[in-house]
Length: 101
Ligand SMILES: [Zn+2]
Image (cartoon, rainbow, N blue to C red; front, top):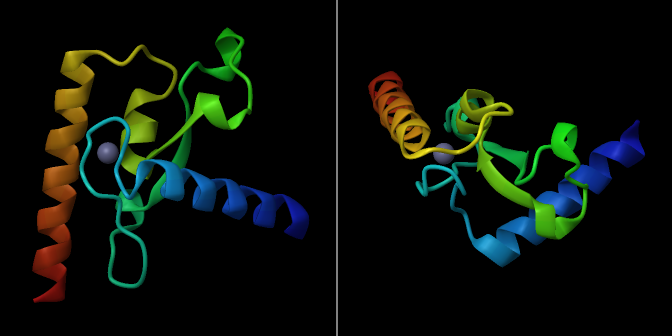
């Protein structure tokens, strides 16, 4: 269990190094650390879903917000879906600001 967790962590670090702190779906910044909204933190997305034959290789993985990943689920990434993710992320960013105040 602990091993799986640290493997996942090292994949996330590699992806951060490769792609920067940017969500591959909405292109907004992924937020880590205290004070950030849970749903704006990083999640690992399969570019080609495993249900469609995608692998767990790094080239098939990308970082996204948790919220974007769950909105995308196993759908194809369309312009409409990207827009939906952006709106949701914006909304969540505002929520965090309000909570901080
Ligand atoms: Zn996103």
